[in-house]
Image 1 (spheres, rainbow, N blue to C red):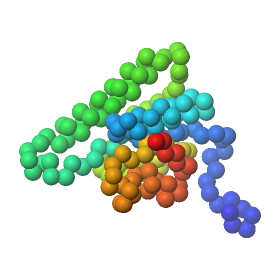
Image 2: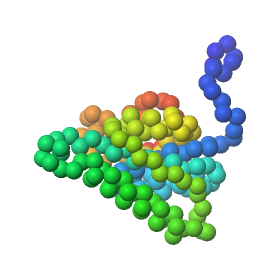
Image 3: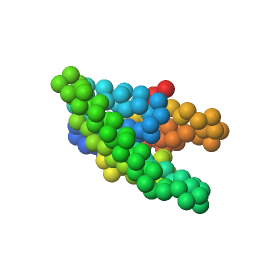
Image 4: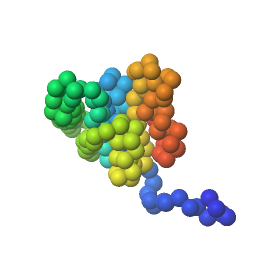
Length: 153
């Protein structure tokens, strides 16, 4: 706020229109998707589920088909989300989209949140011990301070 005038962009709506959640196949990311789906249903918002295909450093040197592997993971995640949504049809209705990007998970989620004009971001807590030192994707999103971020344990 500057001189009593709001300088941030106001979308002119009550409540969120897009809730973005990141999924990577970990248990905490699936809990985040479930939590975000409940929020999206109650708020009548779009649920944007995002998987960022990480670069697999060194895998190409061993002849591993890196691109194919990450595409398979993305397809499996999308299929699991689609199957769950189909099972819950009529009981738990939520509009959702699945997006996949390539690169650093933090930067990918930031890019997706910006492009989709996300009103909130929901992610799972990191399950990797090293993130306590370096900082997890969740911590980096919170520190960015650009959206309300919910971290689901």
